[in-house]
Image 1 (cartoon, rainbow, N blue to C red):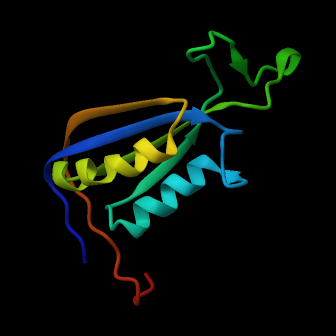
Image 2: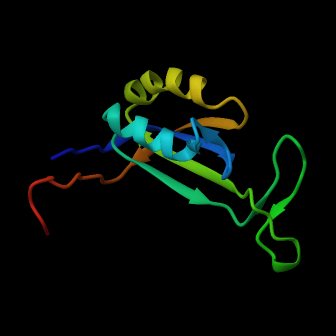
Length: 117
């Protein structure tokens, strides 16, 4: 069972929903690499509206429906683990925004893989 409490580092990666890595979604590749690297977890959130460096507004409003919505991949783990993962993000994220910020984990307990609850 994994336990992570106390000071941690959060990395948030903002990319486009249509950004690809070898013909699959970039956010999927980031999540799979984070898992392979043994990080505590990763979640992907789809934005409903936003803009980036291009200043082009992407929105889900019906009259101006965009097909390339912003997505955010959020990973929280120890500072050492997150910083060790940054070189992979350097390789993957050629256009996007990567933010690091300190945070405090109140409670994270990983589930045992062999036991169903």
